[in-house]
Length: 536
Image (spheres, rainbow, N blue to C red):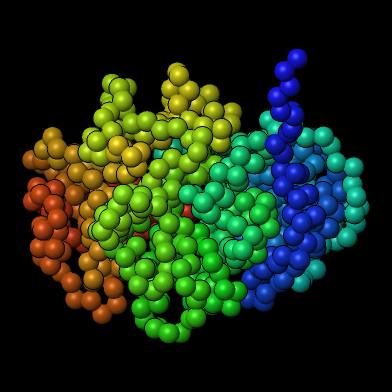
């Protein structure tokens, strides 16, 4: 008989036990809504999470029951991240930036049984039509005020739990958590993550050629814990035992920089709009913050302009460009310049791409006929992916699942990309954001990245606007940097050295701010609606 390997279950309780046994002195730091700072150790976290798990069992939580959270990034949310799946439940993080009606739709569709809510978010929760349907409402008393009946106090619940609860046996294919897409195209759609996918994703994210998270890091999770499991960082950081820092609701540039300075952060993760604000604050306040040199700034959610990557380098902040989606857990690819890149320009060009797929994530780009396009770095196609932490379908939405997954099991991302011979992918647009003008395709992403390389531009979004002759033409919506006097003619001249004349925007609109999605991305659907009747 040939013996191979043990049948060992990849479940989150393994990561949790490891953290408590090996890293009991590591810190978890949280900035609370009142700006006070809470510090606990992994030993405290281990004990509190076990007691919370015990209390949830006492409340009658059963295997596969959904428990929603409506909370900011802090240690109590991290405790829920592990306690709920430890007892066989499914953690369901609700997006607190959505309208109450949207939150209610998602909670009802997921069939959430219990919910854990920050006390500062109770006004939002009370506006949700679905609020009365939760069996148990557990309130986290961040402001130290008494929790009114009939709600349950999170801290008192923990105090009531056992230190050594009898936890159910878990299977790696059991559901561990779920998250809904932002709903920018139709209704939000639920993605259910298994214990196995979460564990493999954590291992993949810790690798040197991906995010390189280690015991020596201090990690600031700016990306919300309700957004694609905070990109898996709570699992990754707990697995390796590094210091974790959570900003609570304080996401303005100065608050984040204060935290990065005081806690000596080595890795932070967030969307480009967060880092553009950080960059602006650093340029306005030279020398104010004493940051660790070489902080890795993981950027995802939308493309990071090359100009931002270069500017961050000047401040000792190294942008690590990543790509992913809710459906990919989310880490799909990460970009580091290859050793073959010899010049600075070559290295920056690679770093501005979305990078190479993570191990076990396979990618392909296909044309309208479903045929794979050439890997020449030029030919665009729709990106399709598969892998052990890529979803196999949407929760209870068979028609949506059929539309987004191919018959041979690949997920259709909706991103238009090019792939080169080294496997680097570059997103040129979303299928819905491409601009088709006079039969030619124009990439809104390329235009935005070039515009944000201009010294007078803080933010730029480009959308297609109907045109009587060319069907569509690009319109650029610009937020200028403070004190800048840049004009549309200036920007057109600037772009003319970088792109063909026919691809340049025909109009530039200057605004104070650009609308964003709940995940911090530019809300192009709102811009298209706002400028749909543009007069040429």
